[in-house]
Amino acid sequence: MKITDVKTYIAGNPWKNWVFTRVETDEGVHGIGEGTLNGFAKTVEAAIHELKQFVIGADPFNVETHSLRLFRDVYSDGGQIQGSALAAIEYACWDIMGKVTKQPVFNLLGGRAHDRLRVYANGWYRGPRTPESYYEKAKAVVGRGYTALKFDPFGPAWRVVDREDFALALDIIAAVRDAVGPHVDILVEGHNRFSVHTALQFADAMAKYQPTWFETPVPPQRISSMVAVAQRSPVPIACGEDYYTREQFSELLMHDAVHIIQLEPQYLGITAAKQVCAMVHAHNGVTAPHSAQGPLCSVACAHLNTSTPNFFIHEIFDDFNDDWSQDILTNPVKVVDGYITLGGDLPGWGADLNYEEIAKHPYNPNNFLPLFRQGWERRKPVDRAA
Image (spheres, helix red, strand yellow):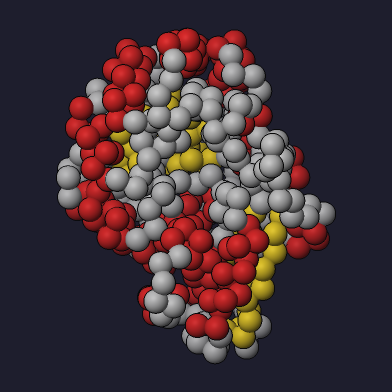
């Protein structure tokens, strides 16, 4: 079997254009992948078409070789863009392998380590940045059966905040804890916003509300900064979604400070993602992969998590996207009473793209998440020039 072509499709989700691939073979079997990257849909699409020359004519089963060549052989560090393009192609190869062997991808990754996956809700807090709004929406989330939920209470904050905004963020955290009660996990999202000292001030202040983690409180580029926060924070620190190489995770883990690792399979590919999970396992850590892209990302992460012994919790946006997003895949993941369960009766990802539905939602350059602008929580298209 040989790869004959790699095709791309973009669905214009209002808060992030979703990029998908279809890898075709000379035996008529195809696989699907995803390469979504906030603000860079067309760029990733171009990168996919530039990189596909390295896999055309190759056996789709050789994912280790593909992952190496798609990263090494261009002799450039394309960062998350290159990683997204690599994963978009490599995901589809795993789908093809599953279809040919008549196995779900999680069986190819080591088999079922978990019968079901506990999930946490994200994207649920669209609306005003007020304690009242977060309270009402958090109530609704747990009313749907979720036992964990994540949110960013910090508005457009960057590096430091004034006293009024500091107090508002804490009031929102308090409101969510009050809404969900003592037994639901609340996960506080930092979105790489703060300096080390501001992050620690927030960590100290929020500790009384017992968040399960404080996520990416400082920018990821200086691993020493993340380690400095993790070593002193009374709240567990979670991070990893920004990294796109095994080496970055190796450096993070060697400090033995962060033990909740949120790798992003769409920057790594499934091959490297599974290896990173094993690295985390060796450091007595747990994995909670970043799954904030499109619906195929949710499926791929579910297969990875099902086969990962040290998996912790699965992120889900799908229930809080526009209604049509559930029609992008023929068989999207479904949350029932706060859990996902993957069946073993469908090969590959167990889903295909709905190309007619994708065509109804064209690319829009204003579909991106502007995390440092007022009102980003509303998740609506934004004028980049504003």
